[in-house]
Image (cartoon, rainbow, N blue to C red; front, side, top):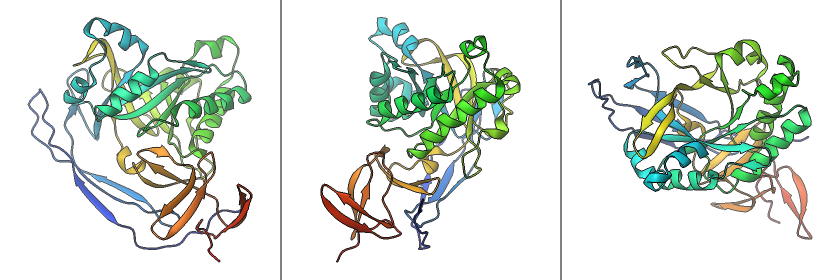
Amino acid sequence: MRTCRFKQWAAPVKALLAAVFLTAAGFAATLTAYASESGGPGVSTMPIFAGPVAFVDANGNAVSGAVEKGISVSKYQNRASESQGGINWQQVRASGVSFAMVRLGYLNDLDPYFQQNMTGASAAGLKTGVFFYTQALTEETAAQEAEFVLSQIRDYPVSYPVAYDVESQYLLDNGLTREQITSHARIFCDIIRQAGYRPMVYTNKNWLDNYLDVTKLTAASGEPYDIWYARYGSDSTCPNRTVWQYTDAGTVDGIAGNVALEYSFVDYGALIPAEGWRLADNTWYYAKDYRIQTGWLTLGDKTYYLEPDGKMVCDTVKNIDGTDYAFDGSGALVTR
């Protein structure tokens, strides 16, 4: 299969200053800054993050390296909050929460509040990712799970990873081995990545130690897949950990009852741009407002065509609606 040529040309540099964080424990105000270089087909992209942060874990200990605070939300939080009129996402955002990982559900079993939570969280200014609970006993079902997730998230601004929750006793009761569970997780992540999103695996220490081989959770490029690590207390040490779930008994303004609390340790704002080109396994995608685009795309004096799955056409002649169009190695339409 042909891949698009890479050109090197100057990329614009952005520099943003994040807000000053003040914690209830009286930590000094800190300043977080980041810059990123962002381009398109043939342009290298390198997120850069630097700066101290001030966050604490469930025991009140300072957390080093965290850049954003988040929550996990599902139908359980929605139902607990019904007496107050539902989740108040504006209050959630005002409490210092920056992102929400929203439960999508199971294969062909969508969380009844998924649409409401994705819409409400993003409208309040929170970044949104999703998590999906696997029950796959075969590689084919793991692939079906990934396709189901893609079919549900395409119309939403997914600005955080798409997570695969493997903590299922159902898998163990059916005799799946560590190798099989790891293979299923990789298949899911591969498909999510190939659709232009950033995949992630959700797991705890027991599953990581006994039922997953993290050394094999890698993309075709060899890049390790992100780990969302659930371990309550003060120890967040884990290979490839980018998000840490540090308690499942937190409280957040705007939500009744217990809420799982998270810290992110990477700048996903740089890794998942709201608009621009994304590269995954030598395939280019274009996102606008965090949504993968399809069809014709014009940028400046260049025109591109994106397949129904978002993949950019390049270095070929393609028949579109009865007409043949030629595209060069950078994906641009060749005018005659």
